[in-house]
Image 1 (tube, rainbow, N blue to C red):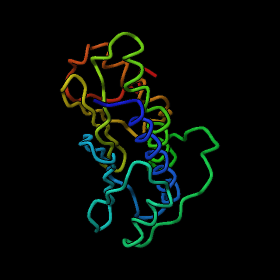
Image 2 (cartoon, helix red, strand yellow; image 1 turned 90 degrees about the vertical axis):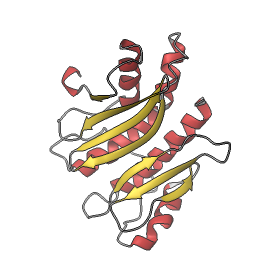
Image 3 (cartoon, rainbow, N blue to C red; image 1 turned 120 degrees about the vertical axis):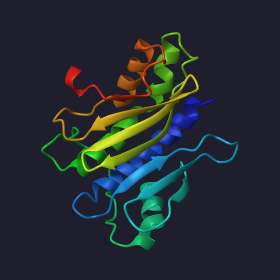
Image 4 (cartoon, rainbow, N blue to C red; image 1 turned 90 degrees about the horizontal axis):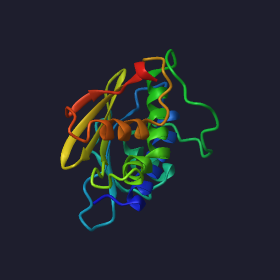
Length: 194
């Protein structure tokens, strides 16, 4: 079962990954997938896949942006992440999709606890959504993969819609509550409704 503490740790890791991606939006370096394998009793970890030639990198979810940068250094070409927090509103298209992707990672990380916490707060702790992975599926689309009520779900999130991607985990939780967790296993993030 996903705990609030593990959601906070995974969220923190996503925010650190966002800082690294934000520093690498102009070149070929990109984080293409960040997965959080099911807790097997060991230290929770993240598996990070890049567009580079290397194998996925396994890091504890407590790793910071500098740890991630160091782990990917063998690929070469990565710019060092900014040590400061994001101090602006999220960007939208026509900004480069990789910058929107970085801001999406930051938003997912910042509010990931709401994915599990919000359903429990409104009386549906059984829904227990868990973020399994987030990925960059093509140049202008990301996907969030999650499990709820034992079913895998995949949410496609456009990076070029021109709509700010804000409170995405909460929107996903609300969608799962609306359809009682039995929705189609794949759906589009509702940017038109925002």
